[in-house]
Length: 241
Image (cartoon, rainbow, N blue to C red; front, side):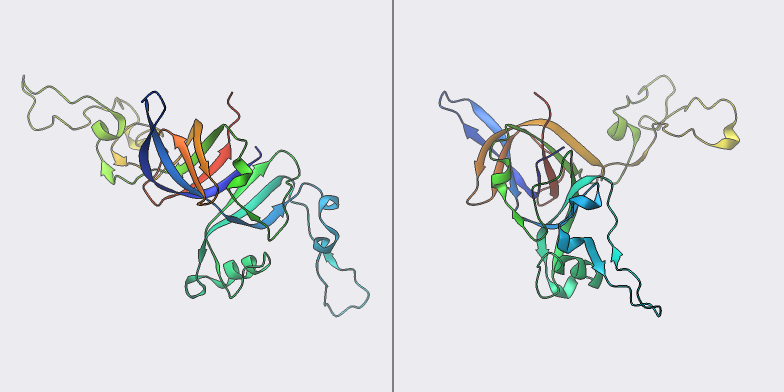
């Protein structure tokens, strides 16, 4: 993994090519994002001013300063959609203050994007849509719409039961589950049954980038992405050819 950005789904529209072909696109507000933290694999890769976190103020004198531990992997922690101070928690605003966010503010959407090498960013830097200027395809991760408690027909595309031959008022019910023994142990894990449908983390891969508007921070990708309008998404450079 490498280049990535946080954003918000605005909705869907369509574009027309020169030959009149209609291209369905999803409009994403991508960035700008604030780099809240850069995670490294080894302590030697940290800047000198970030290696020492604070001094140990114990009773014994002459003790060494406490140094920051390495994270063991490369990642960039990004913040998107600034949150006002009146709704920000103290831990979140204190963490954001290290990246230069003023007045006790924080961010609504904070996520990490893994890198396979040392990221070229520094704490407090702003990352905009120009980071994806040369990217042709992206992977978009979002949270699907919540559909509440649904039956097996809507949730798993089951068929209904027969409408005749003695079937009475159970046409859309699950029917037999095949649990003919050890019924006291309940249903096995992963059994397809009625339940909560939606609100799941889903990634749509290999979406073609149709247009990039760096002035308005708009990214247009071909096709649909998971989640409702105004829902937060993670955009990464796709590894698919």
